[in-house]
Amino acid sequence: MVVAGRKCHLKWDWPYRQKRSPNVLELDVAEAKKHLTDMGFRVSAVLVKPERKYAKKRAGEVVDYNPGWVEKKGLVKLYYVDKEVVAESKKIGFFHR
Image 1 (cartoon, rainbow, N blue to C red):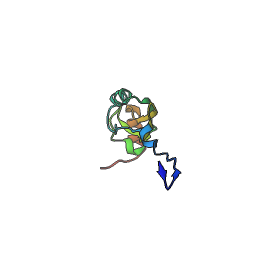
Image 2 (image 1 turned 120 degrees about the vertical axis):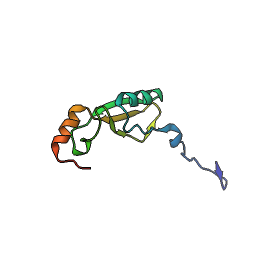
Image 3 (image 1 turned 60 degrees about the vertical axis):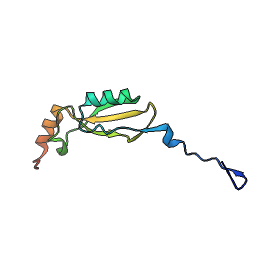
Image 4 (image 1 turned 180 degrees about the horizontal axis):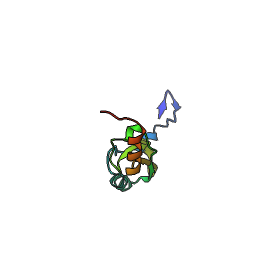
């Protein structure tokens, strides 16, 4: 690019090297992992610690993922709950809704 007789080297290529990872919240962890690996991402599943907010989740459900923008063939972490986490989350405190 030439501006007023000078060359400008702009680095606007960062969005082209990255992909937006799809929203996989509330999917089963195995299904979410398959979708992401089919799109070319590397996937790691991480079991979360019991918290009150997980008391009404299903076992195997993805509750969070990181990051939103990922380099091609980058790592996406899936945070999920299992039945033990859900049971312990129900014991933490009264959950009303």
